[in-house]
Structures are given as structure tokens and as C-alpha cells.
Amino acid sequence: MASSNALAVQSNSPLAAMATTEESNVQAQGSTPYVGFYSKRAEKAVDIAQQVKGIAEGEPYLAKPDGSFTAVTSIGLIGPTFRYGCKLDTEYKITEAVVGCPERDSGLKEHVLAPILAYTKDGVTPTLSTFRPTRVKAALDLVNGNQRATDDACKEAGPVGKQLAKLPQPLRTVGDVKVLHKTSQSTGFAYQIARCETRLLSDVEAEHLANALNDQEFNELCAQIQTSYDSRKSMIESVAAGE
Image (cartoon, rainbow, N blue to C red):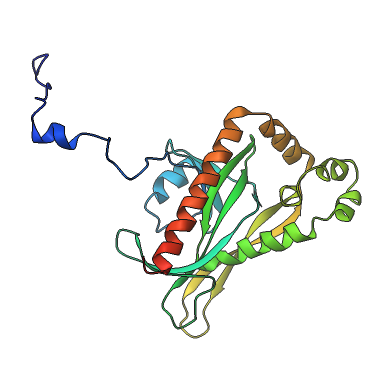
């Protein structure tokens, strides 16, 4: 075992000079939860399958910074979305980007960045999630669902609708994820597309949201996700501008 003073670092050591945060121009931020769509090819596929029993290809799950995974019953689009196309290197760093929908022959893959509410059987968690190529349709479904959640639509939904009408329109709806299994006619390649059948919140989901809105940790996480969303959007815009 090392002696008690074995880890002492001299003040004039080159290592001590490097071990400073005084002049850092990068702000450290904690990780935020995200909604992922299960793939057997994913790096954490085994861990996800062990913790989310019976999860099928393309189905959503909630990933938390502590490394845990939970089944997601429905997802809700909070508000802003950022649509872009990009190329990634082997370390998943964005090397090229364009804001908006990329040209078909550009070689850029379409993505949508969005803050998402992930509903589970135990509650609701705010997340920052990225919808990737075959998943983008699910994001568009959520956008369309939000637009349909008008005051009149809520009034027709009975008692729960009257409560939902008090919420901002984007918070009134969720999407039940439906995975469609497709095969390309030209190549025979099999793939999955996630779609969202949108609806107004159920009584249970409305109760989860009401409880969350009065929870300090939930609101602090929402603020953190807004900051992360703005930061990631700014980074992608910078890459797109060639900065």
C-alpha cells in the first residue's frame, strides 16, 4: 500500500500546472436523460435488454445518467425542435452539418433534436433526445399531434380534457410509439420505423405531470435540458457555418 503522502504533488510539478480549471474555456455540464430506440446493434444493447424485459427492436426506453434503463410507455414533445443533417466520424463527432432537411444526395443523415417528456409506469422525466433517420417520422408525428391539441379538442375529452386545457398546448399530448417493420424493395434491406400515434394525456399521465410540476428536481432538470438544447443547437449551427 502506498504511504500516506505518496499522492502529494509538488507545486512546481508539470502535472500540477495542468491540473487547473482556472483558464478553461469549456464549461462542464452533467449528462441529461434521453429517450432511445432499442437496437440490438447498440453498444448498450445487452444492458438495456436486461433492465427492460421484453423490449423489441425499435421500441423506446429511458436512459438516465446513472446508467439505468427504464421502459417508456409514451413520449411527449415539449416544444422546440431543431432539424438538421450531419456526418459523424468514428467517435460520433459531427464533422459536417446543414440546418434543416439535407439534400437527398448530400450524404448527410437527417436528425431532429428535441426536449421530450418520457412517461413511464412510475412517472414522467424530462429528456433531451435525438431522433435519427428512420425515427424522424415519430418526431413529426408528435409535432402534428401538438397542433391538434386545441382547446376545443380538450373540451370534447371530458373531465381530464378540462384539466389539460389549463396546460400549454404542447404539454397536452403524448405519442404511443408504434414500430413498423419494413423491407426495402430495391435492396431487400430490413429496417424499422418508429411512428407515434398521438393522443391527449390519460388520467394517470396527467397525474404524473401534475406531481412533477410541483417537484423541484424535475424543474431543475428541465432548466438543465433547456441549456443543453441551446448549447447543442449552437454547436451544430457553428459546424454548419464552417466555424
